Length: 250
Ligand code: PGA
Image (cartoon, rainbow, N blue to C red; front, side, top):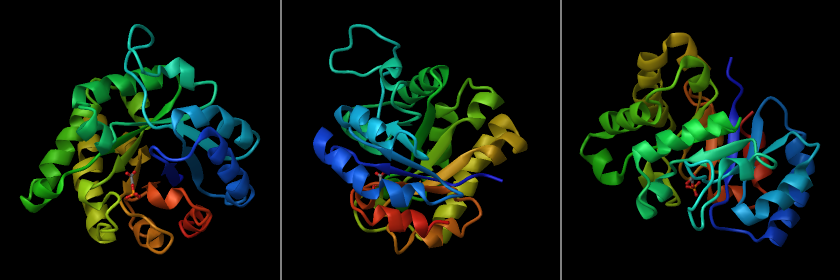
């Protein structure tokens, strides 16, 4: 039985001050929701303050990115050991990172290794573009991303990861994917390749989220699909009704 997980990806929103104000506003109600893992992923500068504000609650903290080298001459980058005092999770390979910052499958694979070595839970993002979707390439493309991301891992490491399937055309567009279709793609393009790589038992343990225009009003549809174990939420995680979204997921 997989514990569902909802993570809020704040992207490049909220300052160190406004982030703490926001979590102080929602934390009691969010903390009270049981049966589901709850995570917020603020921008780097807000992470220490948010982690301090959430100390002692059941709400986890994640980063939105991390470098694949442990330390060194990488101007502007953030390493895993800088995150571990504050974070339990890290989003890796988000489509915005792949598109605007030239992240590759190989880089994502290396980041997952470093995250796991530091005890961070990676939230590994995959998903197809509108053009790929319309060309009927979704399953082959997304399963290729999954195979590349997880190349070289053993079952125990793979079982610690979370995967987020996010069709790029549904991110921030208000155009969410049909829950049945999204769940079926998760089954065939994410869980199936994970089964081929790591076997049935391990693949059944891995939590797979849907992401893309998830809102309080549609989360229940996604959660009803047996292969969807939660959501990675962007815009709807920036406002107090994120609590309602999580309530509607359980
Ligand atoms: P959205 O973003 O919920 O605003 O569509 C999701 C994401 O990019 O993780």
